[in-house]
Length: 584
Image: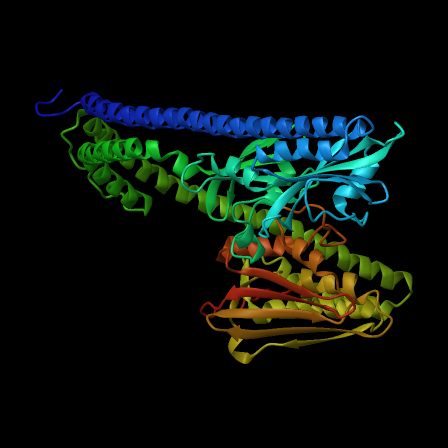
């Protein structure tokens, strides 16, 4: 170890101290989460107990009313033994002892008033809800309302009506069905609801078993639309408790059922108010966490800068190597580990430089061999199709045609057999294509015409040989061959900026866009690009190997609208033609 160097192990020890601080923060967060859950459970349990107490009070109150109803029911059954006025006096005595009972009455099933504690009592119409419900439920009692009624004092108030089908005795000791009615002042239910302490904004309301509001502290605001209640959530949960977002607040809703009436008591408390006791503790935790995070950031910054400074310098030198600059000297470092890494990097750079030179030479050889292999595939392909045409002419007895075709074949192979000349002029390449088209034109008996357009300034431009003829062959075999009318092939060369664009267009049957796109896709092996297995993909690969990925073929085709294949090659300085003399 050199003097003055620092081991990374020491730096790791410092980082461990930072990790401990992070651990402390994690513990603080966990404690906060635990206490939050615990206090939430306590608040929910406390609120549920309050609702349960209100439920018990309501059930106790309902029990008192049912006891009074039972007493009145027994009196009504014994009217043959007890004078009606005496019964009324007894019922009035009960009402005087309670402020919540507005009236006690009995009606016949035809609506006739039989007993009443009100001087203004009158017969029932029989259409009242309490009347019809009692008539349909013998032995059961019902609570109906609240409805607005005029009290004996002349004031209007909301009342809840207790009704039940009973037996009413007459002077002949016979009994007949009747309806017992007890009107209750709604203020009793309101007082029970308002006695609950559910924080500042909490409240309790009652729903009937059919979902109608019996009491709500904000009923007037609900009616005029200035307040909305989550009745949908209550209907969905029916019973129990749930926490939801409604009206911009997180709310705790607890639902219980009053067993005797099947009313639902709904308690609503705002979670933020229930958790007020936790706010101060959270503020303290946030302050502590903030201080620790600031300290951690400072320490991390100092330590990371100490660690990464030499590594960043080394990274900068590596990027230079990545861009191809091998004439670099990695920096020295006080860190023992980084200094060892720099030394290894220097040795590696020297070896990479040597390997790069070897790879360049190897790639040149490989590239030439690939070109030769592709050429070896294409030349036999030309010969096969040409000889096939000659055989066809000979079989038909057209000797003069055979002579013409063999002569064209000789011209055709003057370019093909130019060994060592893979680059020829564009004029020679198109001359080769012209010879091929002459042969095919004779074979197909003038089934198509062709036109070649070559500007004078492009005649000596260099190109890879034998890249146009296979495209023309595909135009004939896969496009024009199936036409009923005369076909046409147009070959056009033109300048395109610093490049040359050569297009081969035909008016053949064309193809779908999906097929055209798949022809040049190197990952697709399911598309036959040529009837003889030698296709456009080989030409595209040859051009890319010679000139780069930005050059090659493109195909535009539509069914029944022909096909255009475009070759893009660079416009390089002109060359001299390759002259092949015929041998005697």
